[in-house]
Amino acid sequence: MIQDGSLAGRTVLMSGGSRGIGLAIALRAARDGANVALLAKTDSPHPRLEGTVHTAADAIRAAGGQALAIVGDVRDDDAIAQAVMETVGTFGGIDAVVNNASVIDLSGSEDLAAKKYDLMQDVNVRGTFMLSRAAIPVLRESGNPHILSLSPPLTVTPRWLGAHPGYSIAKFGMTMATLGLAAEFADAGIAANALWPKTLIATAAVRNVIGGDAMMARSRTPEIYADAAHVVLTQPARAYSGQTLIVEDVLADAGVTDLSGYAAVPGTPDEDLIPDVFL
Image (cartoon, rainbow, N blue to C red; front, top):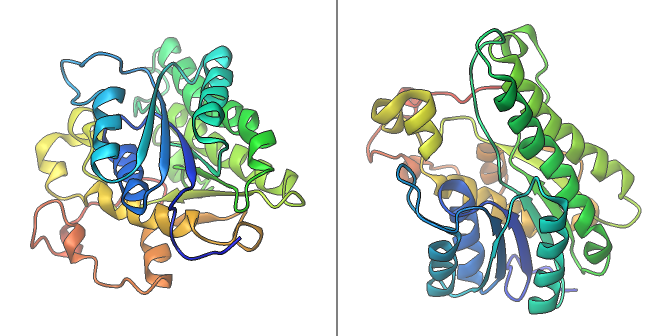
């Protein structure tokens, strides 16, 4: 296996990916000529969210990759099994799993609906574990197998646990599942890492849940996450695993130190950008 910094001919299976950070990661892989399979629920347009799994697949093809749109829910074990089977049947294997699907609710404990708590646990934690686990037998056959979860370092401090316990537990759970898989399958050479940004990323979650257009303007674009994910997924798996990585640090290690081009509003100084949670 030649490690050349490219995902050309490699196959990525991602949860979600119809828009935002997941789509940006998929498009970055597509520009290399990668195969990208998306397991997502968005079969039809949503009134508040642009894009479906089908429009994302079209964009991946337009960017130079091959795409497989799989309509399904990462909470559904049958859908996960079907996604793995369809991906292998279409592309011949799986080289990377990207756990992108996630639910956010920053409500305090008394205000957080039980159904939303369960949803965050089911998508963020269980979905990450089950999709990764289902792909393990196929990842074993890859020349450079990676699992990448979009989740934070384990800063389990009163500051973050107390800010929004339900969401914090779910995001930390994603990371714990990922680090556990890294340790369990180290001998098989399967890398598993978590990746998280220092600043807010301009996504629908920021606009609709966190702070509207004002915070969007003080965020970075999803492309910064995508470029960092690309660096991670092209590392030699046996030597690059079990880490809670920070987007900006990954890029710095790759020689990218000027991040001004990633500002959602060009010209925004770094000091005006809003730090993300958990850091």
